[in-house]
Length: 314
Image (cartoon, rainbow, N blue to C red; front, side, top):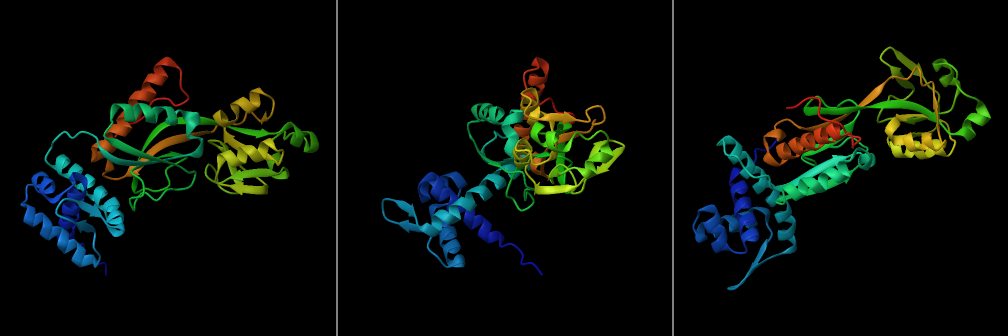
């Protein structure tokens, strides 16, 4: 059986975080509406419960111990989330602030996210955004990320998702590869070719070319969860790959890659923004999702961006 959380320690953590963020016990007491002695008791209680000293106190200053720095990194997040929750519950309109952790695909720069984020931070200077680039499934339910961009169908039904847009897919191969083995003339020919399998966007051993056409493929020398790695391998003539067209558009135009079976491939891959249920109530998450909607709708109107407007809204 799981242990119940010690709610007294939560209050002690908030007191400790307030002491650190304000620079002293007196300032923390004013911020929290407690007496200085009450704040001091809470911090002492926290230190006693975990068995280490968190603060070095003198008559003039309070400094963090190494253990205190580690504890503060976690307590600050608790303070942010409790504050957000209180404001939502009481119906207050809060100003987005605190740390926002975002995960995005490695190719995020190709759908304008890396230009959208600086504009978001300029509008909301009290938000501290941490951006992680990864093509792997992210662990959001344990609090690692507040929001993530995901290419493909959402992988966890317990997460909220908003579809942003869809990207046409394309079969491609390098001229050197095709010169050696020939071009596939039908979808069934793919099983006789060497295929580079990208596991993020498709199942191992099969590619969906359209709503009613799924073909078996021969797994080649490389299987990866990275579209970027699949593109590089294809450019090096290792086989045929199945990728979002925007990723290889420049390669096709420069004849570094050749599109295959274009009249038969009609499948598109969706881009979603996903987050744990309830996170949309947090002002920093709501502001980020709304800002992406605003920016991408503007890009759609001007035709200047690869990322188009949100198709649905929470």
